[in-house]
Length: 377
Ligand SMILES: *[C@@H]1O[C@H](CO)[C@@H](O)[C@H](O)[C@H]1NC(C)=O
Ligand SMILES: *[C@@H]1O[C@H](CO)[C@@H](O)[C@H](O)[C@H]1NC(C)=O
Ligand SMILES: *[C@@H]1O[C@H](CO)[C@@H](O)[C@H](O)[C@H]1NC(C)=O
Image (cartoon, rainbow, N blue to C red):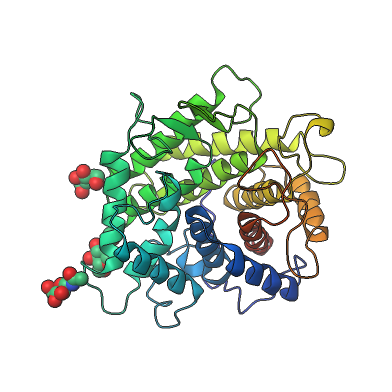
């Protein structure tokens, strides 16, 4: 059942038109609005990730031969490395172990894979480059310093805040931990990433038989037991990157049970999500609430559709791409003439509609890239 279908390493977005997805002009505008608006740690990391998926797919974890990344992008540079270098320059001016010091333990690690790709594709590699030391420090921070639960789940919040688990964490930290492990042939880090998914999934579904993940549990305040669409998207997206990293590591054959678990968790989550799809193709901001008590959210819908096309590319038939296709069309109709995704949740106040969402802009690019790669198989 574990089919190892890879995206062709030759599939460069810049060289091939997007198949009947969004127009090139729309994508350019969405990208420009994303560049203008991304400012928080997770937005910057998610922007760099989306650009890798769209414009540097042969470097990114979904392509065959991408771990370690081929040394082809270094000479061409590109926005991704500029983003990483900006983060490293600001980090050098501060005094903290993670890539950013913003009170979140998980979010700063979202720039971890782009940073490691930056480091590994450097034309004149040194083990003490700022990209390398920053990754070492970020890993050390997550593994050794951030508080955990007894089962190993690492808090999404920085100390001294008490342990709190957010579904968001699964997109931010486990892919970085897994990728670091794959690059350094470190099986215990791959297992650590897997265990984060396993334990988070346990805590975010305990006493909840909906099949959906809660948003925020534990901690002193600010828990959110609702099934936030974007949070479920963060989780699915993180699971699939970890899956692909395990599959492309030296330990792929040793970790078949772990791969089967992640596939089963991601496919059952996504198949449950689409049962709540609205007639227009949207998902609601809190997926299973009555439409009277919440609103359609294009941000979460885009990330969940992107994740669905990704899983369908890795394991054809495991998810309902018809639902993702209806969602993709709805997303297309919600991009305005300036390239803003509309009908989005406020990313800083997740119970309220917002006007613009930097992460939502990135999710559109991820959806375009995932749909392109799905269409190539
Ligand atoms: C990295 O190592 C080289 C060679 O040992 C040294 O010249 C350089 O100053 C080091 N750079 C940093 C940033 O520590
Ligand atoms: C960064 O790249 C150098 C050179 O390829 C490598 O020795 C080092 O281990 C890398 N750092 C990390 C954290 O992967
Ligand atoms: C793997 O990474 C962990 C965490 O950084 C480290 O403690 C361990 O020594 C590494 N194992 C190997 C075999 O390199």
